[in-house]
Image (cartoon, rainbow, N blue to C red; front, top):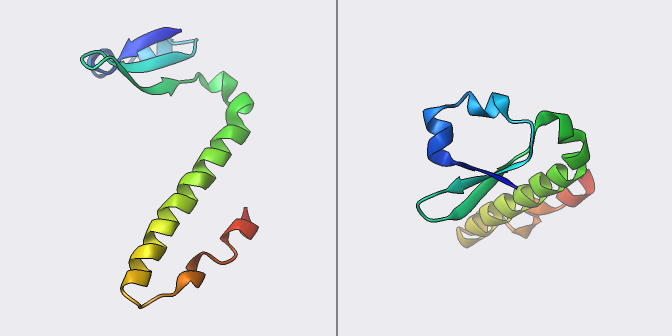
Length: 87
C-alpha cells in the first residue's frame, strides 16, 4: 500500500488531488499510521462501514456526556433511551 507522510501532505496539499489509490497517512518520525486516504470514487464501497463508525463514535460521545451528567445528579441514565432505535 502506498504511504504518504503527514509532512508531505502539509508541504504539498495538491498531492491529495493526484492520488488515485488507497494510501496510509503516516507519521514518518514515529512510523505510526495515522489514517487512511480513500479516493472519492471508492466511497460507495465504504459507505456502510463509515456509517457504522460514525454511529459507534456518536454512542461513545453520548455515553460520556450521560456519565458526566449522572455524576452531577442532574440527569438520570435515560438520556440515551431511544438513541439506538433512531439508527
